[in-house]
Amino acid sequence: MISSRFTVAIHILALIEMSEGSITSAYIAGSVNTNPVVIRRIMSLLSKAGLIESRPGVTGMKLVRPLESITFLDVYRAVEVPENDVLFAIHQNSNPQCVVGRNVQNALEEPLLEAQRQMELSLANTTVAQVVRQMESKQ
Amino acid sequence: MISSRFTVAIHILALIEMSEGSITSAYIAGSVNTNPVVIRRIMSLLSKAGLIESRPGVTGMKLVRPLESITFLDVYRAVEVPENDVLFAIHQNSNPQCVVGRNVQNALEEPLLEAQRQMELSLANTTVAQVVRQMESKQ
DNA sequence: CTATAATGTAACTATATCAGTTACATTATA
DNA sequence: TATAATGTAACTGATATAGTTACATTATAG
Image 1: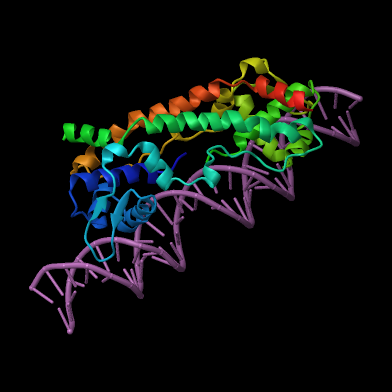
Image 2: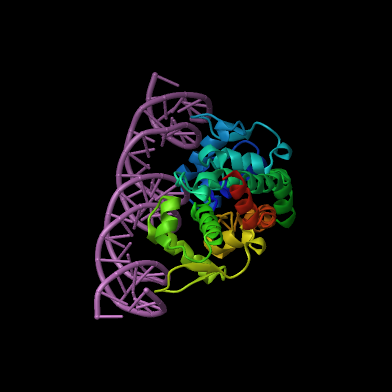
């Protein structure tokens, strides 16, 4: 299961967009219903990915790019960091003296990477802006 | 990251197919390079999913259905059991007094389920038989 | 200039999952 | 009846996640 860092990160981006500059990690934590440090940790990942900017001592944070240009895939890549960006773990060190053991990793790699690609393509189809508009429309 | 139970399960199915009836969990463990109990645990999941049959006291196991009819998705569903079959965790209990907190779970559900569906569709495109043939061709 | 308040992190904890392992009950068959 | 295999329970170590406390750093309001 992909951790909730991902959806919390989208939550954070939505709040930054909607509150125009003067939002704090404590306020966001109140909306997400968690601890401010959890928010700041995810903010740190979003900063490293170049999606937001913030500075110690200065209240608030801002989007580096418009939300229309930030897809779910951008956020996913910013906060979910599986080993080598590989979604499916393939067991290692299987027995080279067995036809299956010798070839299984290689044979599985391509179809599993393809499944991962399809998921990522789908994530790239939705922007954070889209869900923000939808939430605003519901009030 | 999706656990290696999934690829080990494919490994197990391939060995059952190739060794026609007389294979043991100890032998499979030798090929996967792990402990026989790890194999039996996954066998148990494959049995519950109706993919293989085995009986205590009786050496060997057999496929219930031909490998041509078993897709990667069937195996994935047999051995990976995320909560409610949901791939993406969505944080719960966010603040209902905030527009985002009130609507975020609902707004995210559909695009995330769609990404999961795309991954699963891709997994359904490959059968275990296909990778067995490929491994056999490499020897 | 100083007090305040926010960010950025380190460090610790509790919890859960995974994979490996030991142990043993159950069961079919040679 | 002895043997050998499956089916599981139970424990361990490793790792990831999320929550929490603590504190250094930094900008700014007064």
